[in-house]
Image: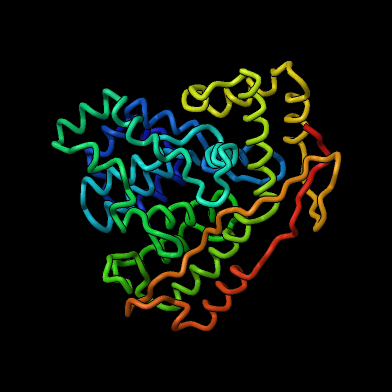
Length: 346
């Protein structure tokens, strides 16, 4: 076991043990590379860890998320290449994660930084040495989209989509505890979907309904105006600092989030520092169906994250469960007020 795993908190260790009762030795070597350890300083919360608008129970890093994805893949496939593709899928994540997608104007797909994955792998001498040792080509592990158990299109269930749903339920929303997660997870198996492709799904309809019901609470949060405004605020701060030459692209991929926050709060240009410090102390945002002037006011259509899982016979749950169909329908039909704003003017 690596030093990294030795130092994990007990809750995370127990959670990882649910995802896979055995952790393959090869995984430790890749996790302990500098390129992977970098994303341990980048949160899955896209900056929400650093504001009072959210009540996070603990910090969950992109490295932990990536390990979780890898463990799910390993648990169901025992395939080394697929497992590593899951581990590497967020290796190119910048500070504040999807906030940088917002900065790049990628509100709906939130994939603007993924093209750097191959570059990050190739530039890591440690990873390349390990891949050579294991007789694995870069192209076999640099695109997890090619493995449907690792990733697939919304609203299908993949290891990535499953992992961030489970962890957000613990650290953000208090929806499921570890025992409930274990019950849900143990019911998951590999099924064949309507296209004849392998996909994660549920053995039991009732547990699939429980999953959809709990997950919806997180889906609603991810399309909320509070989330959209938070990501847009970080994106605006980062873009402004970039335009002023105060932050470089390299900084996004070398500094930790805490180091970047320190850089923002020590900024002497315009009102960047003052606005950011005030934002961190806010406890609520405001909504309107009309634009609000002289405030930080945003309107954005964002990515809808949701899952319509398969159940035992390989059919979508909304085809066999009126309860699940209504839950999913309510979410898809929900629209937030058009504008969100806070009493700041950057």
